[in-house]
Length: 217
Image 1 (cartoon, helix red, strand yellow):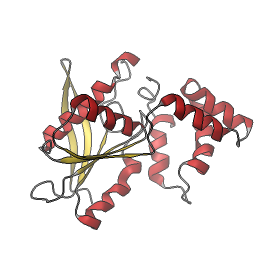
Image 2 (cartoon, rainbow, N blue to C red):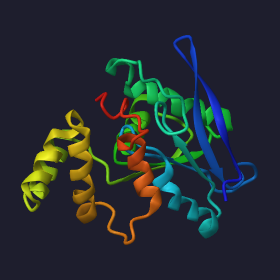
Image 3 (cartoon, rainbow, N blue to C red):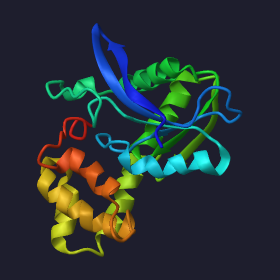
Image 4 (cartoon, one colour):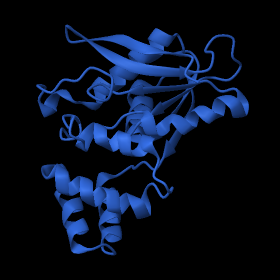
């Protein structure tokens, strides 16, 4: 159960935005540093990372999830140009979250996909003294190698899937359809497909989705 959650003010370049977060467990008086999970994308949301909250029951590790700026329940900024969405922006948001929750002296991070890039850049650029563990899952160190590896996997799929994957966010509809087929083999293999997974993609590709951040890189 999410014991705490809400919106955190995030001041940036004279504007105030808000970051939506959830805390599973008690951050005070706990012997284990809390774990912050950074979602992928950029442009997705925290929902599909909820299974990390099982760590609370398994070893009493508090878990923090949040929607990065521009996504989910955090402030959306559809009028911002691609140049606004920098790695340092998302690092500043993460630092703001740590300070607001009072855990900057001791915490761990797990980053999935793009979240792993963000976590790595945070560690390198800011060298946070409170970082106890850095876990990278399904992430990448080189976008060129990532793209090459994906292209190799695409070869086993029908031409329309390969074409949709290659188009990427230049054709969101075709990309979404291709992504669902691709991930059915190389991503989420659970059946039935969890609602948290489909809801996460709908935040970008759905009728009321917002692809602003996903289209920025």
